[in-house]
Image (cartoon, rainbow, N blue to C red; front, top):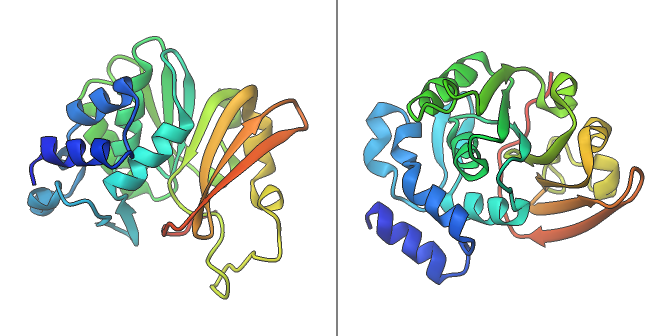
Length: 223
């Protein structure tokens, strides 16, 4: 299955729907965000290891999360757990030169890896993308507020896991820093346990929450 076939498959199955997002998936090659010896695996619709216990997410999952995030041209976006830089580059392509996306990664080596990968598309040179090595659970206060926040690692383990937070509600698990750093009308898409959650900020204190169960993610590393 080549790149076009993979994308067409995601479209046919309903994972990719929005023209601007589809265009970004066609332009930003997943192969450019993998270790060199794994380039031939880029077209597989599955998560792949990128070192340090982290992965580049399955294309199906990335498509689903970005569709739910619904980034718009000119948006200011925080990409938490940026890893390989693939989601950062996709978001940069979608929001265009009038927008900004900030990739935040706690593992220094992965921050550098992602930054170099995204630089291949000149997003850093154009000032559209910028990377920070920091604890993503705290957000990025100096660049806030954001129109969108995307997290690519789960905030809580599955029930019975090491960080089992199943006794808490999704609202209690979602970091207060993320809530504060999001604009009213903005959206957060993040895994919690084995679900993807969409949070829409209706007012300074009110969030709409929508759960999409049945996914698997590596845990978010906190400082």
